[in-house]
Image 1 (cartoon, helix red, strand yellow):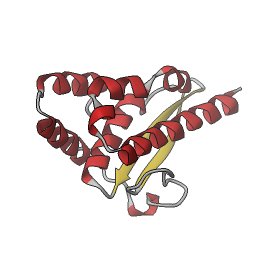
Image 2 (tube, one colour):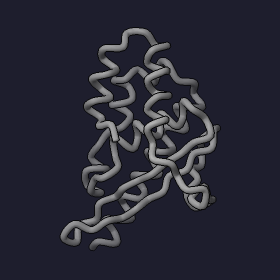
Image 3 (spheres, helix red, strand yellow):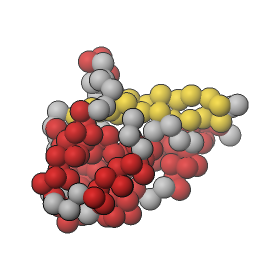
Image 4 (cartoon, one colour):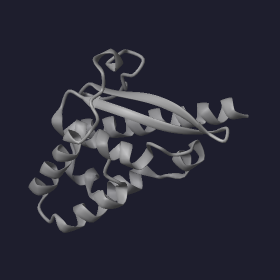
Length: 142
């Protein structure tokens, strides 16, 4: 999986938004396939115009939970946005997830000015879902 720092570096060298959109779509193609059974109502992210699914996997590292995700979407550009969200959050402890300001990262990438309001809302819905998962994992750990 591509790291958020690699994505950041690649965004810096791509000047044109057409090139950035193509890059986001390419990121979506790198996602591990989500089994059809995981395209379920439980994994569906509400608030997205396109269909988005996030599968949460909780691992323990000495008792501390680590949240890993797999994701998918029925839209190419949104699948790429899922890949960026996963690069930012998957494989992290709940405290790290809650301390990470995804909106600041998305603003750094220029998404506020270059995504439709519906896609921006969907992006926020994905982040809210993951942050809710992190809060639940913390509560269960105590």
